[in-house]
Length: 111
Image 1 (cartoon, one colour):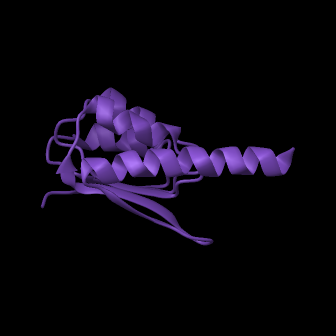
Image 2 (cartoon, rainbow, N blue to C red; image 1 turned 90 degrees about the vertical axis):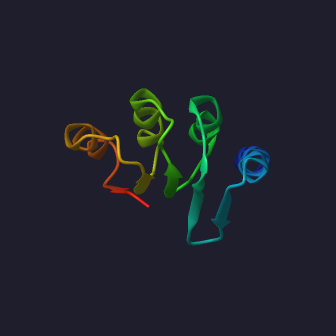
């Protein structure tokens, strides 16, 4: 039964990663790392919601300029997420502190 769950999870992740690529994003998924980037892609809440369905993702980098803070909170709460990198200038220091309660590393960059 565990093998069936693993296969289902892999298939679900593959389906979601194909959608991320369709948006113009990319990913690295190997035995040691699972990272997704939408850093150079402007996404809205509905597009970013697919990130919350990924299982095992460790790092997400995205352009958060059009995302609501609620969407960012949902992303930060993905189980096992270790790093969240945001290309955005509108997230306040207090909002970053809230996100850091959920994920160990949160970086805001303004590129």
